[in-house]
Amino acid sequence: MKEEIVIKYFNIVLNGAEKFDIFSINNILLKKDFNPQTEKEREYFHELCDRIEKLATKLKFFEDGKNGWFELSDKGRKSKELGGYFEYEKHIEKKELESEKNVNINIGNLTQGNNYGTQSSGNTALNSPVKQKTVNKTEKEPSKKSWIEIASWIIGSILGLIAIYEFIIKKLLAE
Image (cartoon, helix red, strand yellow):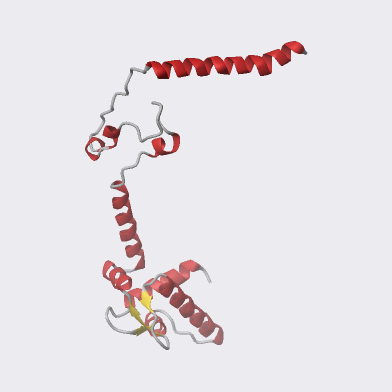
């Protein structure tokens, strides 16, 4: 049985359930869409009800009742208020996107470090929420380099050239 089918009928049960009363998955589906006539249809129906029950309790939309009777959890009531499972998912995604907007992390500096000799988050003025709300403005990067940065760059370049000479050029000339 495809998951899309289970979710479709789960949504039907969710919308058909009473907000503050117990209900049966079987009864809601029998009232809405199903009228199993043959043995094969009844098996399919019972398998669908079992899958809906497992999905709903796993996602915590239904509070597990006894003998096939359930009650909506707070999450289930909220999704019923919003119009069903799919609307609830959209609501949650929208909420998550809004909360992600409030997170203020410069991932490039966290993973790569900056180019100014430290592994910190760089210029903290660039990370402030006030600066983030400005549109089409760019911050000027500092143009002055300290003498230590310049000296370390020169020494690194010289050491790189010496290494190339020692390990590559000498071997090529020796052959």
